[in-house]
Image 1: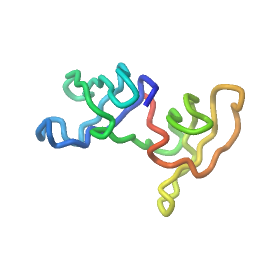
Image 2 (image 1 turned 90 degrees about the horizontal axis):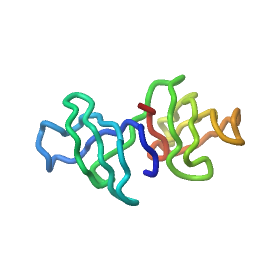
Image 3 (image 1 turned 180 degrees about the vertical axis):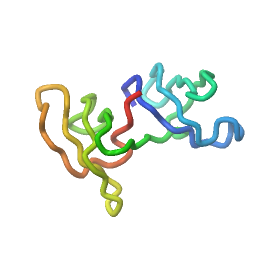
Image 4 (image 1 turned 45 degrees about the horizontal axis):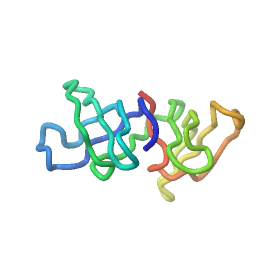
Length: 114
């Protein structure tokens, strides 16, 4: 997850119901697998493994960051989702490929921007 200021959902139950399914913003990436997040509701800061988090897919028209693949690190606008293939279509909004529409990006490879 090499990007800051994306919204993620806490999916582990190990922290108790207080944090389960809560949304948080990535504030710092510790290493390839660990990040410090700030819980949106409470403001609490937690250090979590990526297996305890999942990406958040916003409504079409909203901004996302591409987390993996050839467009990694770019901002994009979500055009639509394809529930059958668990993927999304986005328009790249930053970098040299700005304006390019990309189909078939897996849900886990994009996340809502904070």
